[in-house]
Every structure is written in C-alpha cells, then in structure tokens.
Image (cartoon, rainbow, N blue to C red; front, top):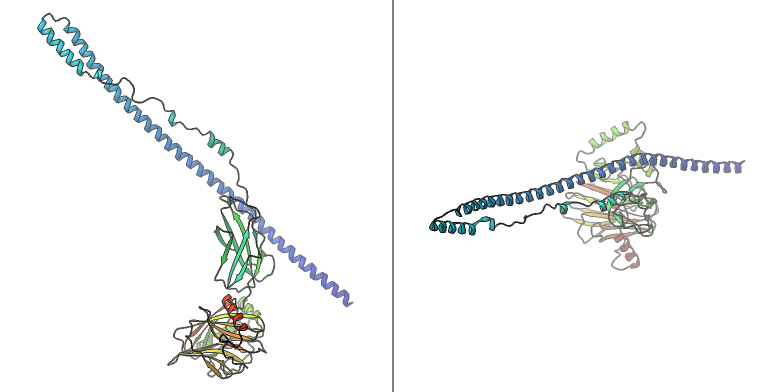
Length: 496
C-alpha cells in the first residue's frame, strides 16, 4: 500500500511538472502570436515609411534637376538673344552704308565723289558687321543634362528584404558575475558583416531555469550595443537569478533572440526589523534614525499598522516574512539604553556582505552582528553574543572594536561607509572601509547560533545597503589575511 502511494505521488508530481511546463509553453505561444501580429504591423509601417522616403528623395531630385535644365535654357537663350540683337544692328548699319555707297556712285563732281568715298571707307572700317562673330556663342545641345536611370532602375528592381540575422550565442564560460555587476559575452554563429548593433534584454527572477512569460517582471532593454559584450554595473542583487537574452540587428531588421541565459545573482537581502527596535528609533526598511520624541509617533504608527494588518497580509509583508519567518515578532523590543535594531533575516551559513553609511552629525553608532537571544537591555559588543565596531563622536571621536565588554581601539580614520563581511562557516567577521576596501578589524571565532545584523544609533541616523555581493577586493584581502595568520594583516582577535 505504501509503495503504491509513493509511486502514485511520483506520478502526480511528474504530471504536475509536465502540466506546468505545458502551461508555460502555452503562455509563450500566446505571447509569440501577439508579437507576430504587432511586429507585422510595425514592419509594414516601416516599409511604407521607407518607400515614402524614396518618393520624397526622387521628387526632390526631379525638382533640382528641372531647375538646372531651366537655368541652362535661360542662360543659352539670353546669350543667343544678345548675339541676335548684335547681328541685327550690324546688318541694319551695313545695309544703310551699302545704300549710301550706291548713291555715291552717281556723284559727278570729282571733289564731292572723293569726299563721299573717304566717308564710305571710314565707315566700312568702323562697321560692326566686320567685328562680330558669325558663330553662335552657345549650342542648342541639352543632352549633357539628360539622366540615365538604367543602373538605378536595376538596383531598385533588385531591392529585396535584408536577410534576418541569426540568433547570437551567449558564451556562459566568458560571462562574469562579480561586484554587483554582470558581464554578458556573446558571439554570432557565423560571420555577418551586415550587423549594425545588438540588443540586450535582462530581468530579475527567483526561478532557476528558462524564463517564464507568466508571473515574471518585464524585460529591461539596452539598445545599440556595438560590441559583443556588455557589463551591467551598480545592480542590487535582490533576486536569486537574472535572465539574459541578446539579438542582432542590421539596418532594417532585428533577428531572433538568443537562447536565454540564467545566471545566479544571490546576495544577502534584509531589512531592519522594527518589531525589535528601541522605541527611540524611527525605523524604515533600510534606514534607522534617532527619534527625540521618545517613540510616541512611532508607537502610534506601529499600532496603526498592527490594526490595519489584522486581515490578509500585504504582498510586501508576506515577502519579508518569508525570508525569515522565525525572526519577526518572536523577541522583545530593545529598551533602556540599548538603542538597537536588528535585521530581519538570519545568517546561518555562507559568506555575506553589506554596507552602512552614518549621517555626518551622528553622535554615536555601532555596526555588527548578534545572536538572536541578545537581551533587550544588552548593548552591541558588551555581551559574548554580539560583535561590533563602535564610533563615538561625542566631544571627541573614538573608534573601537567591541565584544564581550572588551574594546580594542582602532587607530585610523572613521570611513564614510563601513562594509561588513561575515563568513559564518569560517567563523570570521571583518569590517572594511567600503570605499577603499581597507581592512578595519577582524573578529575570529566559531559562530554557534544563527546571526542577525545589528545596529545601534544615538542622535543621528544610519542608512543600510544590502543585496551586495562580497567585493572582489574583500575576497582577495580575506585570502591574504587567512594565508598570513599571525602577521600584521590580522589584528589581535577578540573571541568568545
């Protein structure tokens, strides 16, 4: 009976997975069908636009060429009209002189005849008929302004769709995830000299595998990438994975997307747990600030939230609680002079990193980790269940590492941002200058319980940055420090 139930459970599980796979494929087909319809309309519109552009260019060229012909016609006509006018005047003068010469032949008086002959000679010498050119200045030939469109006609008749670029191939070996940046590298399956640019799309997901159309965030697009690699930097890794896909584009058409690539981008993401915070602290997801009102406004706000949240919890609240359901609402609020707030996510294994920035006018604050059982009156670093570095800007600045009510003064400048590195399995907690990655201090111990990030603040505020990978520089420093135990790179340790 039990064996049959187990076999039936396996069948049900297999069938459910297959149904889920088919449903995902149906969603993909529906999405693709809509894409075919939308993209067909787009390319027809683009084709109309291209041909309208060609018509416009031809119209402009025709107008320009027609103007050139008309200008040439006007120029030649003017030259020939001027020459015609000159010839007409010369002919008129010549005919008048010819008539005068004919009359002079009838003169009988020798003296009068000689006088007339001299006049005729002088006038003939000066006559324009003998100075003008009897050759047209311009010809009537206009063939130099004719156009042979045979080559262009052949080109237009040979016009066809550009070949669709093949889908690129993402190279998983060359892709890199480091320092909250992702570098994607791809190549074309065969050389294509008509490729103009590439389009990269990406989206965050918590699903390990092929992207799903349903219940996923929209793709974000980066266009006009000229090379075959691209780096996305400054990311917050608040999801476990990221999907990537690439397609190639030529001057007219975009090709198919590459097979999607899923890369792991897991990092520690947590918020501040206002159910644990001292009432003198005003707490939001990633910011805590000293509250001079003594928490009255905050207390009313919390009561309002509790009354409002008595029904179905909001998606955001469900999401936060799902990260660590055992943390929220399971401990007393800090009180007395323990102006402390804890993170809402426990660290039980692995290597993690987060950063903290203090307000410039913050008088006193601590950054570190603690076990969940840290007492509500306890201060960070003053018990054997908490480790921290403490900054005091009251009267004069002091900087120290604290654990089990012991302090180690740190002779260095307090950085603007403090990076916290926690290697739970390796029993190491290190603090860094987040900008320069200078090591500030390292605790080495064996953690026996899950750790919670802890923060104390008085007269000021702290801003928290999570979703960060362990920086490469920190990894290198950790290797160096662990490889040179007992040297100057590893400061005197305070252990439990």
